[in-house]
Amino acid sequence: MTSSPLRVAVVGAGPAGIFTADILTRQNRDVQVDLFERLPVPYGLVRYGVAPDHPRIKAIIDALQEALGSGTIRLIAGVDVGVDLPLDALRTVYDAVVISTGADDDAPLSVPGVDLPGSFGASAFVSWYDAHPDAPQDWPLDAEQVAVIGAGNVALDVARMLAKHATDLLPTEIPDHVHAGLAASRVTDVHLFARRGPAEAAFSPLELRELGEVPDVDVVVDPADMVFDRSSDALLAASRQRRIVAKTVVAWSERDPATMRASRRIHLHFMQAPVRIDGDAHVASLTLERTRHRANGTVEGTGELVSYPVGQVYRAIGYASSAVPGAPFDALRRRIPHEKGRVLDADGSVVSGLYVSGWIKRGPVGLIGSTKSDSLETVTRLMEDAEAHADAGGRPDPLPGLLDRHGLTGIGWDGWLRVDRRERELGDERGRERIKIFSREEMSAVARAESTVRA
Image (cartoon, rainbow, N blue to C red; front, top):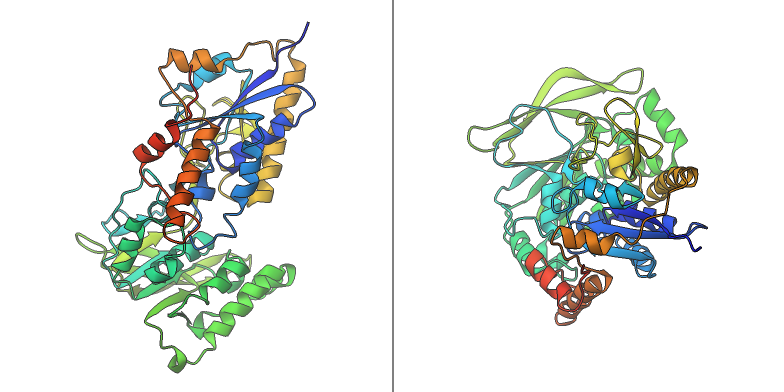
């Protein structure tokens, strides 16, 4: 008798979901993987979280495309698990379900005034300039002075996109409405604030160097902010990347202000922590407290306050995951509780057949290498459990009946290829590699014209 394959549903077609699905299909035993994605297209934050002027970073799509195009993973896009399709419905018909929905929200900043108009989470701005189908088509860039709070690469991306001239983005994949919004921008000065010093910043050397190469934009650094202590020296001694970052920032601080003649500026401020966002009906200024190093490597406030007259504030202090209806969720840590990938319930007990991988598992840290290792850990536990249960793999193909019972029609792999082809055609018409389709309806229409996953 021929045994049926192990049936696994993976929820989320970003890097973590695709890596998890790919690793599963490479197991020695027969495994069928169905990959569910709420958007009409795959790739998650690689498509909708990377600045459009970073084409080499987006090259990771090529690897993801190869995995998805291998024919061993069945893509069902345009189906929102937990909304269109209950999670329990998947768990009933699949041998295992892996949640890999990533992080789609901003970590909270608990300061007075954070909810004022003109105060934004970085993820919302990133979604707009990356033409996410759920993002608004208009973005108010009506302030000359703006603030970005954060000391990571997302903060650098936001600062660079705010300061960069729209004409310099024309070779990228941005659609017309994003270009028009950036072209109408009144921004002249972007102030980026980090609560610790240059040695502690989480910038990558490449991202930081690119900041200094933006045409007609000067990077301004106050020499007084170049603060290093014993713990900073230890960090620098242990990390070549941190040494490069610190050296770059120190070099910028030593520039003669008289040589800076660009029409726009990015100011990097260190050792300043946000205290409040001021304004009546709209953001009018940002107040920060100067900090100093403590012996243990952290920082503390000095009591000295400084205020900047900015009309917008962008919070780029990290991403956060959202709950998946029907799955356990730690609302404080913004993660699904787990034990090496096995989901745990509120009592700390393992939820049979339910697993988690990616940022919703470990938090929004780490790059592609970390994501692969994380996915491997989850798959290892899943396969251990599958081998331990005699009935694992005993169910027939669950997908047709599942979609039929819930009145759903998903978008398959060749539907994404149709969208990909159309975006490249739009780019060819303008001498560009591609121009994104930003409307969910248009994306779905293009994708469904030739390909759907039907019951």
